[in-house]
Length: 301
Image (cartoon, rainbow, N blue to C red; front, side):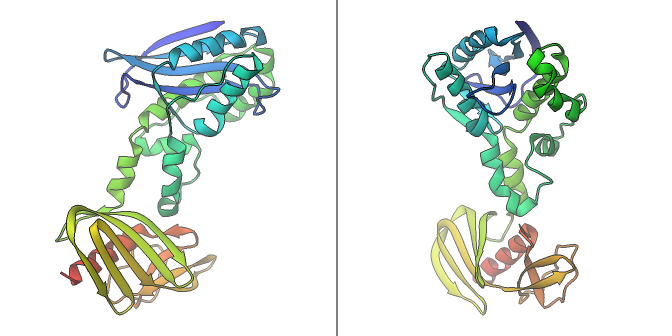
């Protein structure tokens, strides 16, 4: 077994948490094997990257024993771990006649995915999301790295590229642990009553349901405007907004509302000033939605 321990300055990791990422010979845990177990662990304000590379399948059980020991009483933080890493490890434990584990886990991909409707990420792959936290990896060619999963890694003759890729996955995951704060800041706006944060927006036929959270408790209220209704209870704000569907530009269809407040469209799409863009294809225009919500709320108080 190849073992690597490297000091790492973890800024987003607590002592009762570990970052976990694995590399395997393939995606089918019934026939594929665990090759590399990667972990970032922090104790007494000192963090280390640990990597354990099995030189052949006979060492897989040792990797699983290390996994069991490392996650004891720890919360596991992964990127897509609830779907892949943890089920794969459990199936390999069962394969070796051991019990599967149900650790406390935080899958950052699950946390990030709902924000895609507002930000339209280039992709939900870790190497695209990590850039939001200012991390730009220096992997060996990703194509070469992944080709070795089905070639060199099955022979275990060239561990460096996949170990470097795994290290970068671990670092990137640690960097984005608090990425939700980044999104919440983007989806927030100040109003005269309270800062408000956009939680969700969905369109059903000709009505957009906009959900927001107020930082301050507000008086329970109901207002009916020309093309909207506003419902406030505690710190939850619901706006039901009438919208129209149409062609906004070449290859762009979407929804607009009547621009009663004469707001500037925050969009690269040029449309008539009488309309405000709410959604472009599948991406909700959060800047327009926030500006409109602010005006609707302030207009009633």
